[in-house]
Length: 154
Image 1 (cartoon, one colour):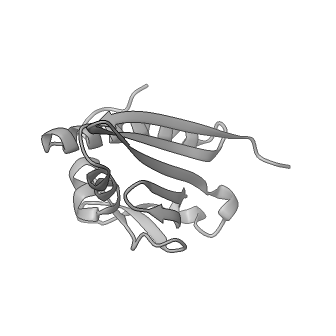
Image 2: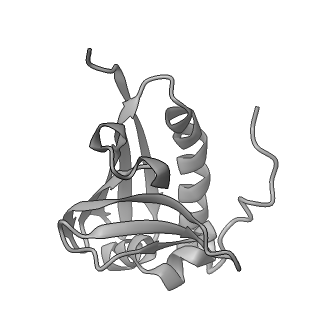
Image 3: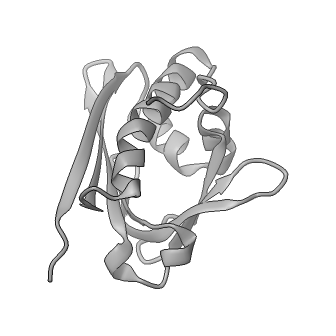
């Protein structure tokens, strides 16, 4: 039986360059400044990547593989909880499409191949808007949002 899947798409416009947006997604020392996590990989297709909580415990929160990497315009990764790393059927996919749009960037994040009704599907619909708003604030003002100090939305 095939599982029912869903997707989540978020589009934002950022006063920045494609190079800076890609760097903000891919460089651990930058991601920790607006996300509180580090995205760690060499970003070559086929390579592993980890989403690591940037605290004393350095907890790995998400794992996956790099499917496609075309700096500074496109990054595609798989996404899974560490305990499901060995089960490709449990992986979803995230695509970052970075396009110049006048003097700004249009960033489209598509998180698809999500199991409909799953905890992951519910979490990403709240998580991506907060993370991407923080990314936008960070690139435009130098300060990310305190997204981890706030209560979870109902």
